[in-house]
Length: 109
Length: 232
Image (cartoon, rainbow over all chains, first blue to last red; front, side, top):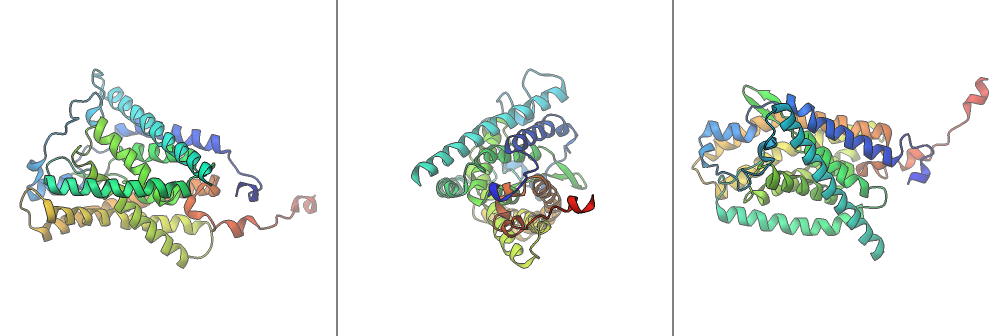
C-alpha cells in the first residue's frame, strides 16, 4: 500500500530507528522516575493476605534481576543499563522472529 | 500484573503453560499472514517498546502503581497474532532475565498479559472501528477504549485462575472487587499511553498501523489538486 501513499512522511528505516531510540531512552533514563510502589496485583495480594504465597523466582539471582545490573552500584546506571540491555534483547528476539516468519510466508506463497 | 511463582498451584500453572504454548503455536502460523516486508521490522520495535514502557510504573492511588500491559497497543500496531508473539517475547525475557514474573508462572503471565489483553483489545477495537466515523482519529479513539477494557479483563482472568488454583484461601468476591478496582485505574493509564502511541504512529506513518489497514484505502485515493499554482 506504500505506492498509494504519495509521500510517506518518514522512511520505514528512520521510523524504526526513531522508535528504538525512544524505547532506549524510556528504559534507560525515564525508568528512573517510575513509581516504586507495589503494582495492582501485589497491592491486592498484600491487602488480602496472599502476598506471602510468593516464592522466589529461579532467576532471582540473575545478573539483571529486578531491573538492576549486578556489580553496578550506582542506582541510576544500574537500572538504566538493565533497561537498555532488556530493550536490545527483546528487539533482537522480536526482530528475528518477525523476519523469520515473513520469509517463510513469502516462500510459501 | 506479573504473577510471581507460588500464587497459583502447580496443576494450574501447568495448564496455563500448555494453553499458552498452544495459542503461541497458532499465533506463529497466524502471524505469517500479518507479516509482510513492511510490518516485519515492526515486530521487534513493538516488542522493545512494550518492554520499555512496562518499566514505567505510574502511581494510581495510595501506595499503588501500575504499568502498561501493551497487548491492545501491539494488536492495533502489528495485528493480533503478531502481538501475541511480541508479548510472549517480552514476558519471557522479563521472567528469564529480570525475575519479573515467575518462571513457573510464565504460562500464566503469557495467558493473562499476552493473550487475554490482545484478544479483548483487538475484538473491542475492531467492533468500535465499525461504529466510529471513518476518519484517522477514530483509530486512536478505538485503541483508547480497547486498551482501557483490556486491563480489567486481564485482571478478571487472573481472578478466574485464582479461583481454580489459588494457593492461599481468599474470598473470591473480595479478590474480584480489589483486582477490578485497581485495574480500572491502571486501564486509564494503559488507554492514555496506547492512544498517544497509536496517534503518534498514525501522524507519521499511518500505513504502518495494521489496525488501520483498509481504513486508509479510501483516504489515500483522494486526488490532491495543485493549488499552489493558483495562489501564485
